[in-house]
Amino acid sequence: PHLAGERLTARNVTRRFAGVTAVDGVTLAVPPGRITALTGPNGAGKSTLFDCLSGAGRPDAGQVLLGGRDITRLPEHARARLGLARTFQQLAVFPGLTVADNIRVGAEQATAGRATSSPAARTEEVLHLLGLTALRDHPAADLPTGTLRLVELGRTLAMAPTVLLLDEPAAGLDRRETALLVDLLRSLADGGLALLLVEHDRELVDELASGVHVMRAGRAQYRGGVSGASGASGVRRGT
Ligand code: ADP
Ligand code: MG
Image 1 (cartoon, rainbow, N blue to C red):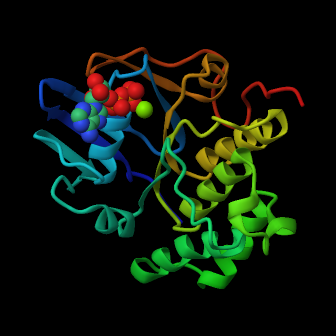
Image 2: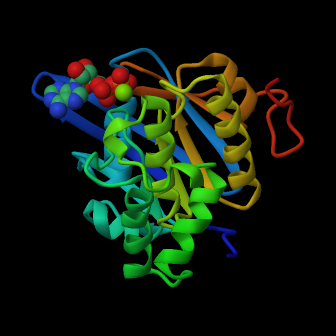
């Protein structure tokens, strides 16, 4: 799909809880064809900003735009239908379903709203992409955290997103899974996807991100491009 011009923008987004301004006037853009990172200490407001972007939470002030369209007041499922998908810091998989059926849930959501290949075809495609084909009929409940992260990522990819928000995608992944994730995220960016990544692993951020926003006490500061990070031409993690 031609994704040029599709992107996500936050404009002066603010989100308050009782006694704390978790997100304080954040402005940032998530351009297509690139990986943008969001870093900062615990409690900085990263997950809360993600909630405002994805629709899991509503900002108290400011706007969220997707490809120029104001989506600030749209619920999460409506944003997903427009091509905005996310993963959670706390894993969100269906333990009672198999690996394939978890991914199928995302594929069904995509075809409910946007013209793509059939849910069955997309499920197979994503299983293959994530190296999960051998585990397809395995119940999710029995799988280790690293594998479950890939399953959750698979469910969001099956939604055929144009913008993908990933909250600490490498948490719990072993070395092999991290290498797979790095290659996958690069190829997704090369294919035109707009990616925003919350990540603490400095090495991973330097390796992947072409722009970094550092959050601290609800405020975000842009730190510009990171040397060495780009598309497929970037330096690869050794395996
Ligand atoms: P990060 O993801 O960067 O670690 P969070 O977005 O989770 O930070 O939290 C930012 C701030 O907002 C913290 O002070 C946290 O305690 C507070 N916070 C987050 N969610 C809630 C909530 N649902 N109710 C009250 N306070 C919250
Ligand atoms: Mg968080």
